Structures are given as structure tokens and as C-alpha cells.
Length: 321
Ligand code: F6P
Image (tube, rainbow, N blue to C red; front, side):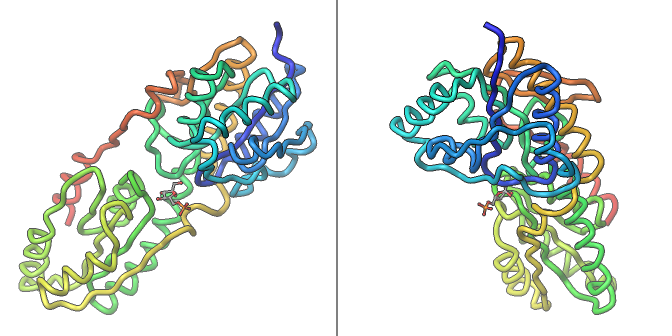
């Protein structure tokens, strides 16, 4: 049977460019005479029956807006059998032929459950600032987040250099060091701590003291939140070196703001592809882009660990400090 109506939701942490993805899903579906129902607040909203038809005009002027017009949430209820049963009931009640789920690992986990366990066709679009989805070079929002964090680090660098200090800057990434690595390299940081690798803080402090003896007085250390808090890293540095430190936690500013051209365009291309796959009757797939070409993988593969250039960036930092 031809696909007539699909649902789209955003779930988990929002990411700049999610709106561009929603727009692309709605507009490309409309071209194929497929109706789109927007599901508000992710899987939680599906369970609570928060749905509305999205037409061509309802997604006007959102391509350049951060956040998500569909709102987003992390649903504990959807992790339960009862919650899933209720979500499936709503999908059937509204005669939705398939779902496009936009988000990160948790969102994809929901898509796996719905497609494999409950037989609801699902396609995933990678929307997360963490860039930790496999099968795609980049996730929607990661480029914007990196640039936001980099802008902040450039500003911190001005004061670090002027006051000759050691600064520890914490960026987002509970399980992913992607943002930390990118801004460490791009921002000329001296060191970076990520959750994917063990880090030798004693060795770093040794380098700081040695540098200090040579006359190097300003340092920026970038810490991904999953590798430890900036506060505790700064305290360890002070304890081990007796040097004064300062801390900046960039926090959720990294999740907001106007999406970059790269994120909008990635979102636009992947939205079209997700609709195409669903209308062809495919399910349990995730869309992405590898070396500028659309790439489709199983949702199960997409949630496996992806490591981007960690060792390469560590090596580069050593040569550039
Ligand atoms: O969306 C991913 C992310 O921003 C992670 O980098 C971060 O650890 C987490 O979400 C924070 O989640 P919350 O907004 O629920 O505190």
C-alpha cells in the first residue's frame, strides 16, 4: 500500500538545524502527496497524543532558526512496555504509515524498538551536537555547536593571554569528545580531555610546570563534560602545580543559535532522503552523508560507537603547542 501519511518527531537534546530537517521532511513529503503529522515533544508527545498536521506553510521561515518547532524531550515512559504499547496505539489510531525520528542515540534506540519490536516503519535522521552517530561524517547541529564553542574559546584566549593564566574550558559531550577535540585544535588549546580516552593529568601538570619555567604562562585546557568537570580538573592543576587557574563552562549556549550553512544543508538533504526511503517501504534505517554522498545504514549500526580523529588530534596538539 502506498505511503499516505507519515509522522515526524524530534527527541533528546535539541540541535541547531533540526528545524531545517523538519521543513525538508514536510516539503518533500508534500511534493510526493504524503501528509505529515508533526509529533510534539518526541516519544513523550507520541504517548500523550500531541500531534498536528504540518502543511507546506507551517514550516515557512524556520530554516534558519535554532531549536525545534516540534519541541523535544527525553521520555522515561517510552522505555517501558506500557509506554511503547501506547505509542504504537497512537500511531495506528492516526493511520500513520511510518515515522521519521530526528535525534541522537536515544532517539535511534526508540526507532529500533518501534521498527523491530512493533513493526512500525522508522527512518532516523541524525540530529545531535555530539556527532557520535555512525554511518555519517557529520550530524545536524554539530558544526554549529563547534563554531559557537570556538567563538567563546577565541574570546577566552584574549583574556588568557592578557592575564597570563591557565584556563580550563568545559564543553558539552557526555559520551562524546567531538566538540572538545574540534575546538581544541581550532582554538589552539594546549590540551584536551575526552571521555573516550584515559588522560594523564599528572603528565599534563608536569608539562605546565616545565612550560612555566621556560616562560610559557598561558594555557587553555579543553574538557568534554563526560571526561570530568572543569572545576575538578582546574583544582587538580592548582593542587599539583601551585599555579592559579580559572574555569569557564560553556554549557547549553552550544545547543542554540542560528544553524550554519553546513547544518542547514545537511538537514535539507537528509530530510528528502528519509522521506524517499519511507515512501519506498524501507524501515529501520538511518540516513547520513559520507564524503559528500548520501549514505544509508541500519539503525543498529548507527548507534555503534564512532570515534572521530581522536588520536590524530592528540598528536596534532602535541606538535602545535
Ligand atoms: O544533546 C547532547 C547533549 O547536549 C550532550 O552533549 C550533553 O551531555 C547532554 O545533551 C545534556 O543534556 P541535557 O540538556 O538534558 O542536560
